[in-house]
Image (cartoon, rainbow, N blue to C red; front, side):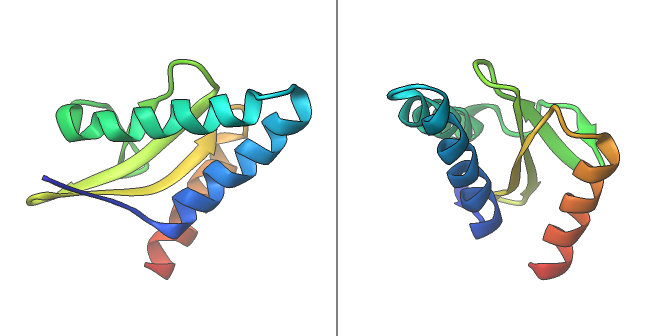
Length: 102
């Protein structure tokens, strides 16, 4: 399996990292490492997560974020990494934007 992380997902993680950097010393780095560890886990667990808005959704263990991805043949594509505390309609809109710009 190949794992591809789109720029939109990397931007989401970068924004989260900046937010957590302001919350405490080293917390942004911990956030970054935790989320990329979750993304890496998709190489083993891709496709077992529930579907939301036509994407598989992996809920991160340590932070209130979800990783939205699709599996196509031998490729896993991570589209977005979004804050679960946002309204579902906002999340849906972000996913629609990602899909149209891909």
